[in-house]
Length: 109
Image (cartoon, rainbow, N blue to C red; front, side):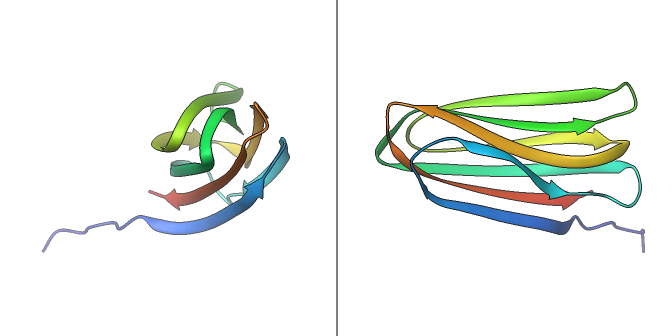
């Protein structure tokens, strides 16, 4: 039987009923380099007018960031990243005064 690696959830964070920006928040600090999958879900009431969620980390080349822009009643996205050192962090900025909730899960692959 082949050796099968199953993704392991290493962190999960919820930011409920946000009405402003979310300051940079560490999601996970790996003990060794590796590949990680981020699952993101955001919803708003009545709709998310404009929210940008930014992830930061350090790979083998250097500091990296990924900005995901959202607008609508709910949105989802998945991203993969290689972390060589340091932490995976998230922040969010919004305009339009909408109340929104952000859910993020980090899995080690």
